[in-house]
Image 1: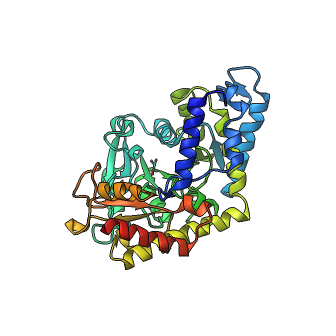
Image 2: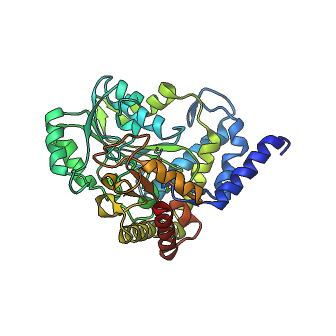
Image 3: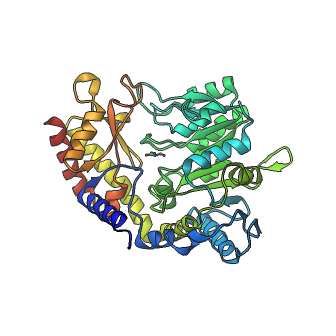
Length: 394
Ligand code: DSN
């Protein structure tokens, strides 16, 4: 590389990434092939529009690329082309979610989503996000005692508030989600049902987490978390669902382009296609299974060492540790900083019923997807848990 300054930073970051234990559950290490496709000459091309309907010439190859990526997305999640439309153009998860609301919910309408402190994402209608300014969030949390979803309470809320759309699939919820129950809740108030499977998409592809596709009208996902692709996103929408005489898939496509975005990032689309092929292999199934086993091993050992695990455990790629324990432990911010000094990267996180602030919350969020990519197993998780315990108690 001629640019020595940037080359130096790439080398410095490579060394940092290699030298730490990375327990951020939304990060991963993409393969060389994914990174090669991401940095390929596809990035030179403008392709506003969709395959065979572009606003620029020279798009014969990119049409082939985008269609192949859509096909691979259906294959990775075992979907029929008859039922599912795929949009691979969202630049990342936030515009993907925004596009679904823009397509399906009238401005000012109600979106039922989980609060940030209970584990919801910013784009599920939080006030500080555009999604909470243009639409009105109907917030829900978890049961304060069990710290898991209370479907009965959700149904009562949905019937009272009548949201236009309900979103499930969260950022810091360690448990399995019952999508069938959410479907019933959405049907009881006539709402669309959307699942944001960003965190557990790789686990769905690997067959170790409930698939939302049997029940949802729309499924969004980022591609860089458990799916182990580049930073990007996909929207899946049912071809048989309509608003009036308009297909929801057409409304969502229009919301992405020209509603929110200009030209798609074709290097990203090429890299997503590579990742989706990788996610369709038996080796990836084994990886997904190991991610869950590793999460559970980490949670079990930390719990044995006296740390409170939110909801008592995990069935996914992540766990939440209540490090504050009502004043008996240490705040999440301090825990994050201490662990980073010891070479373990985590993120501070709010916990259900948070009594502190998002900047200095009561807990930390941990997850093994990146370390599992590096080949770590349960015995390594036990060692890591013991190191975390030593550092936090110093
Ligand atoms: N920021 C991501 C996460 O870490 O969960 C969600 O978009």
